[in-house]
Length: 302
Length: 125
Image (tube, rainbow over all chains, first blue to last red):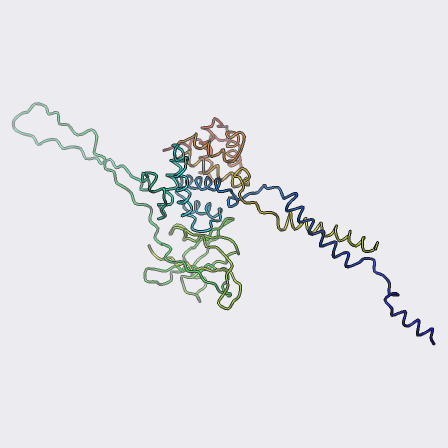
């Protein structure tokens, strides 16, 4: 009887349980130390080789030169979409066009402006930001020749009339039809967009998190269906049309953003793009929920 | 004790693997203040197109070369030629190709493949 009791107790004893192959405590300590050592090695001792740098990672001086490049490109092709897209790739903290003005200001106050190449570059920057209604200290430092308004020379075929015949014969007059007709220089207007971005409102809502809501309206504020809206970001673009969600009104269209990315919105061929990127930044709703900021963009006839 | 040591070493090996994955792949060091010479090829190409556009606009070859020095390439004419030929081979934007051809030609690197684009290129003022 005693033997049975003794045997029963000892069977329950921890000293009689089969030992595991591994010590969990040892394993956990090892994993923790290993992760720490691995991160230290990967982040400090042997960091990943830098081979895929994007413009936003550039050091300030090279960033400024990249912006100069953007302005030079714009001076050549006048493609505002492309210029804005290139600036968005720099992930500006604030207004990207104002950053162009700031760069022009910085360069104008250094020796960069002492060379003709540098001066031309600064003028390209000035032309770019002035066309977008910005200003900077370069305006007062560098004389700017406004090349924004192209001019067309029209040669008018208006020959000088011969004097009326008189009864008295006169020696052959030296007055001849002018070989060079007068030239009239007529400034041409900038290409006009028929729509403008009338307003951009930001809001934060859980049910429309990270949404760009586009409203195309006529001059009376009525929604206009069937209008194309284009959204661009650093890796692509998307075009969508108003009126496909009639429950939100005929002039309504929307686009879902990805968190952390910046977007410009425009009506292709009918408006300029938004000058500031619409950034899908985290926000907190009135109810305290985490969401992504959303935007309402209103296009109206300009 | 032996059991503990074996477990510790096994854990270290596993943890090291996880740590290297996290540090190199999942959450790698993000560099800032980088020089333009380390720009990815895509952005280097785009920068060359911008500079070439500026050159076609103002005809300032010295200024264009000076700007391209930013990319830290040893032989700028050869580099512009390589990018131009790649743009042509990949059927990139014709306007971009034309400005690249204009710059390449001014750097003495006009090759037969560029000839068809030369007619629509030219420096302006």
